[in-house]
Amino acid sequence: MYHAPATHSQTTLTTAPPTSHHFDQLPIIDISGLYSPDLPIRLHTAEALGKAAREVGFFYITGHAVSRLMRSHLIEQTRDFFDLPLTEKMRYYIGNSGNLAHRGYVPEGEEVFATGKHDRKEAFDLGFEHSVDDPDVIAGTPMHGLNVWPEQTGFEAAIRTYYQAVFALGQTLLHGFALALGLAEDAFDGFIQNPTSQLRLIHYPFDASASDSPGIGAHTDYECFTILLPTAPGLEVVNGEGKWIDAPPMEDAFIVNIGDLMEIWSGGTFVATAHRVRKVSTERYSFPLFFGCDYHTRVEPLPAFATAETIQKYPALNAGEHLFAQTAQSFGYLKVRLNNGSLKLGHHARPLNSFGPSEHKL
Ligand SMILES: O=C(O)CCC(=O)C(=O)O
Ligand SMILES: [Fe+2]
Image (tube, rainbow, N blue to C red):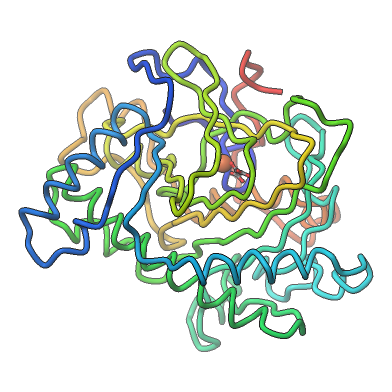
């Protein structure tokens, strides 16, 4: 279901979860068939993907092409970076990334959500790199530009390699989703020529006092879909009865979840399922790639899914403006600029958490 997004990459859940489907665990889908040169094999795999996207909106994928070595380099480099003293990490502070490129280190307390609470977490944010002569970079369009790279030996190479591999996996999944919706395999490609697609390296530090209390509140992800690699349990997904189902890490698998844009395009055929992160007393790293579309994309139900009902339920929005509006309202350095008038959002920017309280929100 789609609701006004409350944070960058996250939409706070404001109404009851989908009621139609019962599940006690997430489905596991071997996606290797999507890499086949034979269309019938790709279609067969897409069918399983589509069933999971319709009924659960959240699933494990195996049979992908992101190697174990790439994943372990990512984790090692991230661990080494977060182990650095704060003053060193602050050299790469996200608030210093020029031109609203919004890349770099996010210290604890920088991100404050609609509830006013901040999570005990730090992050390092990066994204799709746009060339310096890209018209959007020249125009200063938010979230466009180059990544910030710490001097740490091996960091840039490891993170770049991972980004490229997981982004390519996203493109493969995108084709699978298109087939699953009965569309041409490349139906979405035109929307994803120059996306922002953020990869976040997130560190939830060891917190002995945090036994089973809520961490990141219930939300759906804002973009097309998310490809997540977690290192420890903590993620929970809501089922049709409103029960929270554990989604622990699974060896060699990613967790994929449908985001709001896919739900809008498919007129609700695919569901953006709410999830949250429990505070656990283990140190935890997680790596979501928010597979998004081009900044200027107008997102609305595609013709095959446009009915009076879906058009009313999913009013068109501008993907990038909306994403940035939510980011600007949750990151401290951008809030300062909003407050002093040096940054302005369009008059139609929705406030954080616009739809009021809910039983599933913190
Ligand atoms: O840390 C996780 O496992 C997921 C984080 C998440 O849901 C998000 O950042 O949108
Ligand atoms: Fe999320």
